[in-house]
Length: 395
Ligand code: ZN
Image (cartoon, rainbow, N blue to C red; front, side, top):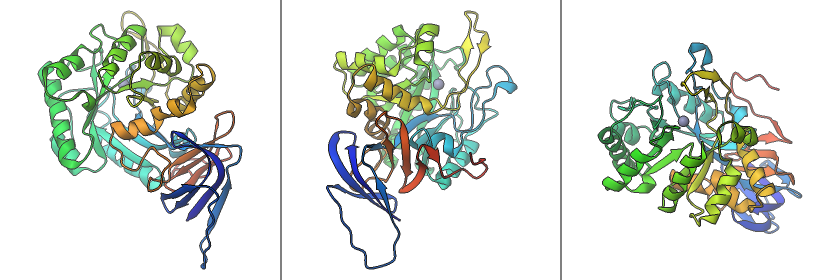
């Protein structure tokens, strides 16, 4: 399949002006002015008029509970699995799946099977070994073997700290798991990253900082997530990012409500703060926590409400950054493209450039997602999914 997008404003994520994008098979062949191709054979060429639209790399959502998550309010609160179109219509072309609180009734082998299914359905998928808890449950019996032997496993997580739902990991347990992930990553050419769930406990990032300070494991080995869950935690994480660490924001479909409810810092306001503090613009990512439950607890730790996260929050955060905080699109969009590609060492992802995977989104002038292409195939057209997962009802 050959696809040409004509006359589109390209953010690769850096803005490079109006260009044509030529995709052959699942790769970007070139990005140039006025591409013309002459074919002396019968090959279908799909021409897309990109005028009035903006092309950005396909989104990398690096923290999604693909199997569903939750369950903290009993079995009836277990959330449903992700579907192909729920991801693609939100612009997601690469997803990293994780287990959360429940690594017992949901296990890693099922997560791997789910990730393989989504890959066959058309997007790119990876997973983390483990769940909230240490010691970590693996497929092969060892963290290092899982990362080295199973292509889709690129690290471990989400390991929970400072949370009443964590396994209350010790310094030694946490450092040992991180060391195994790092060395296995080195040996297999992967990131070997440790995705760290930060709870709202008063210890905040103490354990993470101790491991960074007291061991030789570099700060870039970790991606702490939910950094924006409250102002105090966020300020700690701003300082952590200033030291060179990655930090991952969790998006919200209603940032104003979440700000009022528990002081959550929206991505757009948080990014503004990072810019004021001169944090490296390579060091932040944004994820949806998709399919996870969004539990609301009272001061006694009792569950009082529940929702389900989706990847829809991603573009909302980008729009708010551009429209409400006047942050350039080429900066904000890094959170979903070049930055996670770097943090997770995803080769050929996160950029609209020759040789990279043909994953991209076309946005309209209002920054709404109009078209989504994954591995060279149009998945969403005119804001409507046209490719569906095996058991999805076509809407
Ligand atoms: Zn989490």
